[in-house]
Amino acid sequence: MFKKCFLLLALVSCALSALLADTIQLKDKAAVVGKILSEKKDQVVVDVGFTVLVVPRNQIVKISKSDAPEPAPKSSAPSKASPEIVAKAPVEARPGFYSAPSTPSPLHTVRDLVNQIGEAVVQVRTPSGLGSGFIINEDGFLITNFHVIEGETQISIEVYHQKNGELTRKSYKQVRIIAINKFEDLALLRIDDKDAPKFKYLLMGSADALSVGERVFAIGSPLGLERTVTEGILSTKTRQLGGDLYLQTTAQINPGNSGGPLFNMGGEVIGVTNMKITFGEGLGFAIPAEAVKFFLDHRDSYAYANDNPSNPYHYLQPPSHTSLSPTEE
Image 1 (cartoon, rainbow, N blue to C red):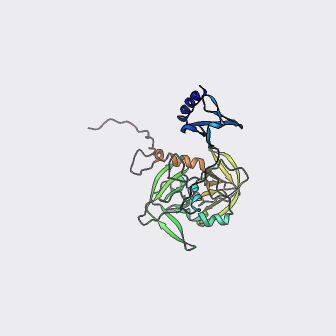
Image 2: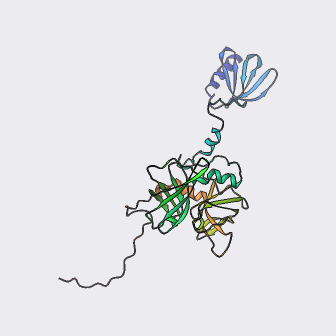
Image 3: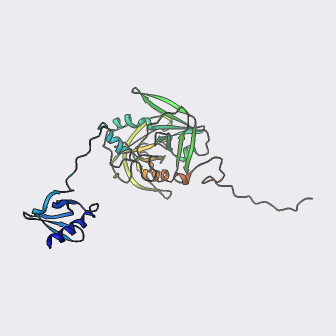
C-alpha cells in the first residue's frame, strides 16, 4: 500500500518540476522533484510543495541537486567581449538608444580615461557662440544644453576622431534638433551628414550611486579651448537652484563647458555641466544623469520640429491692448 501511494505522489510531483528544485530519480523510471530537506543513511526527506515525502534509500537511483553550479557553456567569442556586453547593456525604457552599465565600471585614472572616452566629447558651434556636448550612441545622437542652441538653426558639431593614435578634427554641419527641454536645459541633437561614420559614444552612469567627496572630472571647451580636462570632487548632490536639484562640483566649469559631460572615475557620465557661480571659484553645477536619462527615455514627449507651430514650449506673444474705432465704409 505504501509503495502505491508513494508512486502516485511521485508521478504528481513530476508535473511540478518547473517550479521545484532538486530531482530524485527512482526505480521504475519515476522521479520526485522538490527541495531536499535532509538526507539520512536510510532515507531522504523531500518537500514537494503540497506535502513532505520520506523516500527510502533503496528506492533511489540518483539524486540531482540544482544548487550545484552548472559549468558555463564554452563560447567561441574571445573573452574580452564580455566587458563590452556589460558596458552596452541598455536601459529597458529605450533599448539600444543609449547605454548604461549594469554593474559599476572599474576605476581608472583621469589620464587613462581621457584617452579612452575623449573622442566622444564634442564641441557644439552656433553663429552666436559655442558649447560642449557628448555622443550617446554610434548613430550620432548627442546631448548638450538647451541654452547652447536656443534660438539657433545653424548648428555644427566638431568631433575629434582618433586614428593611429592621433586625433583628427572633423566638422559636421548637417545637425538636426531632435528634442528639447527648456526647463531642464537639455537638448538632443543628431549628426545627419551622409558621410558620417559610426561614432564612439559614452555610457550613462548614475549620480545616485556616488557619494559626496568622490572624485569627478569634466571635459569640454571652456572659452573655446577644446578638449580641456578639469578634475575635482563632488561637493553635494542636492544643491537646489531655481527649484531643481543639481550636482555641485569643484571641477572648474566655465563658459564653453555648457553641455559637456561630468564623469565619475569609471568613465561614466554622471551629469551634464551647465552653469557656475561667476564670482566664486570651484562652484560648478551639473544636471544629474537621472534627469538626463528621463529626458532621453521620454524624448518623444519633447520632440522638436521647427516647422510645427505646436512644437513643445512654443509660446505666442500675448495680444496688445488696441483701441476700438468704428469701421469705415
